[in-house]
Image (cartoon, rainbow, N blue to C red; front, side, top):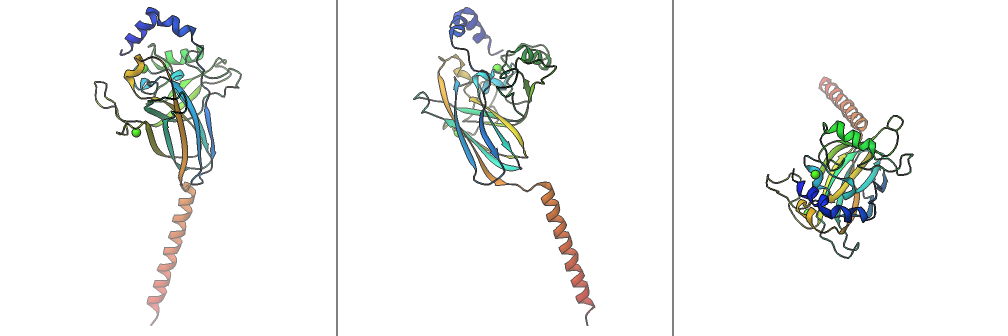
Length: 267
Ligand SMILES: [Ca+2]
Ligand SMILES: [Ca+2]
């Protein structure tokens, strides 16, 4: 458990300071909007995270805490190739150093206006889910950067099912090796930006973004700004379109063969 030191510090007294801090917001997604596949459509929104390790903290065996991440969501009404870009936003707080990492999922978290309020890692429902999905192991939260995961709010799970995030992919700024080899998914260039393209079917999607510097979990907490952008880089035909295209080509081939056959009969 690489986190035992963190827990020891909290127990030793930092916990008092943490408790006196304002309660961290639960999951309040930044909605980037709805896209129909029109090439060039784009949207940007700013967010912030406390510290520079929230994303990578969710890549390990004891998961991570969504309070250390910012959440974006978007909707595609058609299949499309989209580009996701996250970079440090120095304008927030006047300083930065964020090395962004993100994971993309299909699915949405509860709308904060839902009866049970926004999702958070330590609701009774989320803890029950954690205990089931982790096989009883205590985790740092509900967030999993490289796997499907679930989280919920204060609603009654019998009447309001938990949010389900289905993992699609991830990327992060630079490259990181904490002693067990390079963690896959780094862009290899530490420039406080990470950009990745995805081909996605129509659907609703969530992106969890945070820092990728695991070692900075021991640094003083400071808020780091994030600029998150989605751009539609190409529209992709639906399978039915391909089917129509292939059918058309097939008919064309038949016509050509018939004309050739007719031609061969001519003297
Ligand atoms: Ca962790
Ligand atoms: Ca980079």
